[in-house]
Each structure stands twice: as C-alpha cells, then as structure tokens.
Image (cartoon, rainbow, N blue to C red; front, side, top):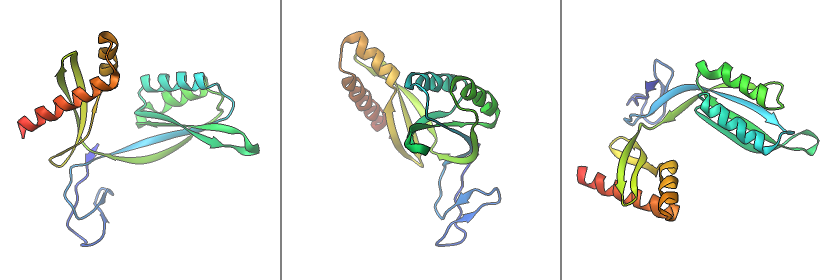
Length: 181
C-alpha cells in the first residue's frame, strides 16, 4: 500500500510519479492499493447460492463482492459476479467460485483502488455503543456511517426503529467531533 502524493509539476495537467501513480497539482493523503478483480458470468444458478457464495468469499478474505445483472447470449438473464481481492487471496477465492458456482472459469484483472484513510469511533447512544466508520480527505471528515450490525442489534434489543439508532449515532458522532475541533 502506498500513499498517493500529488505534485505541483506539470501545471494544468496530471502526470505520473516515479512509481507510476497518477498525480495531479493538489496535495492529498489518499491511499492507493493495487488489487485484483475476479469476474465470472453466471446464468444458471439460484440466487440463494450466489448469496451463500458471496458470504464464503468475504469470510475467505475478499475485500468486496458484488453482482451485476447482465444479459447473456441467446437473451438469457444472468449475473456478473465480481470479487475485489489481494494477490495472496486470489487462488483460494477462485477455488471457492469454481466449487460453489456453475462457472467453469474466471477472468482476473489488476486494478488500482484509491481511497481515503478511514477510522472507527465508538459513540455512546441511550441504547448502547455504536461503532461509526468515517473517512478523511485532508482535515475534512467524509462519509460518516454508523455500523449496521451495531445499530440492528440495538434496534432489536430495544424494539426501536433502526433509523432512530442510525440518526442518534450520527448526531453523537458529530457532537463529539465538534468538541475536538
């Protein structure tokens, strides 16, 4: 993993750094990772099996798993199964796909993922503690989101609407951040 640093060189356009990372004229602290995308088209598999396979892939170390509806040859509906992973998890994840689905092969692409640094903060609510994930771009906090599992557990335990827990966790988070700044 490397930090993407922006350079002031080549005013008015982007350039490549020595490491081959795309840079532009503004300073940043974004994180750049080289990852792999594994893909396969599936047209003859139960949605329950796709959900089960997705769960197994995430447990086995996939960074992300998603499906996209697609139209295949002969007008058949299907799904594009996509998996984002590191090089060291590639082979075990491919084995899961080939074992759990009807796919006979996969495509593998190298890709670069650029993201902002992220962190978690525990925030107290009247019903219990909720982890809140947030990102930072420079000094600015971005993409604040209370963790679903924490909020759902508290909503069930206290028979409160899930959205109420989300809203309270976000309110407490922003109040805590206001005290720090």
